[in-house]
Amino acid sequence: MQEYSTIIGKILAPVNRRKFKHFVDKYKGDFASKKLSCWEQFVAILLGQITNCSSLRDIVSFVNFQTNNHYHLGIKKDIARSTLSLANNNRDWHIYRDVFLDLIKTLKQKEYFQTKEVIEIIDSTPIMLDLKQHPWIETTMKVKGLKTHVVYNLNQEMPVYFDITGARTNDINIAKTIELKAGVTYVVDKGYTDYNWWNGINEAGAFFVTRIKKNAKISELSEIQNPDKPVSSQIITLTNKYPGGNRRNKYANKPLKRVFVQREGKRPLILVTNDLSRSDEEIAELYKQRWQIELFFKWIKQNLKIKKFLGNSENAIKTQICIAMISFVLLRLMDELKEICKEIPTKIMLKIVGNNLFKCLRIRKYGRRRCKDPNQLQFSWILAS
Image 1 (cartoon, rainbow, N blue to C red):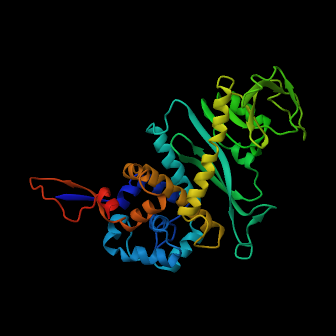
Image 2 (image 1 turned 90 degrees about the vertical axis):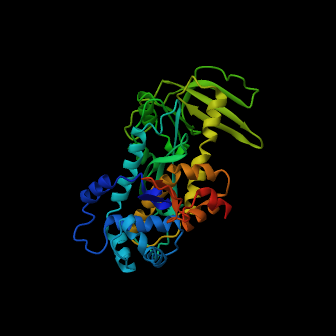
Image 3 (image 1 turned 135 degrees about the vertical axis):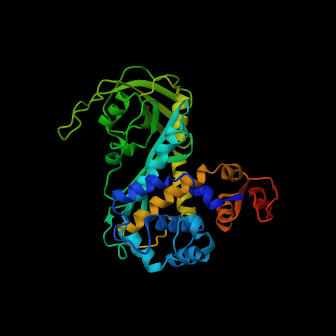
């Protein structure tokens, strides 16, 4: 007896089917569904993400062409384009967001993210949409569409939390809903300036590194240390106890470190942190690493389906974003891909994987016969082709 493991089977393996069904039942995703289940919808859209299909018609053609593999994918029969479109519009997108969060939770339980110093970057990216095709979107002076808010784990180079909101939702409002963890260093831009949120991070035993606004009222407790060096610092406190709107600044009169980073031809970059033990250079380097989340946004928009969408409804677009985030995590979890990502460009790697999803990655043999299957395909062979 032989058991074959395909590349797509390896990619989908971390998704817990029992918990997936729990989320489907929670949001009644398969209620009165006869032609297409949520799992079939999920697999179809995920295949479209990995193979870079440009339309629903392309996804349906690709899936239906793989009739011999439908059973292993959990697909009962061929999928119709209209049925898939209807599912994207009506199946609650929170199903797939919860699948993503459960996947990350499982990884944390397996100590996948356990490192000595955990660095998490919080930021958001706009999802620009056309107002004529999407009349339901919110608009601001800069953004017309949606915003995807992400917490990015710098150690594992992977998103660990995300949410999707309208363009008018302030970034700090989403940051306040994130569970703060002791020992974690949160790196954010000055758009997340909220003294009481900083205080919450401090009381949770965590740290923050961010930029300080020019109009912040402070009191200098020490002289600037090493003012002639590229990076210098001093200890300060916030003095404005009531910043406005009947709000009380709970972080007033608590020590902070202000770090000055000299830049050639530009004004100094002024950072602030509650981590008094790290050196000035380490604080500056942490803020420099914030650029990694921008590279993540760029990667996922260029290589997965985040810029061009398969539907015009709000639910369809949010569903596609959720499954794109799941696709990124599943691809990052493949050990075989980790080894070859360093050797070839990302676009070529995705094209190779997309073209060989149903090839055998590994073969397990039982019994006395040890014959090698000539159809077996190893990743080394893929790269050589």
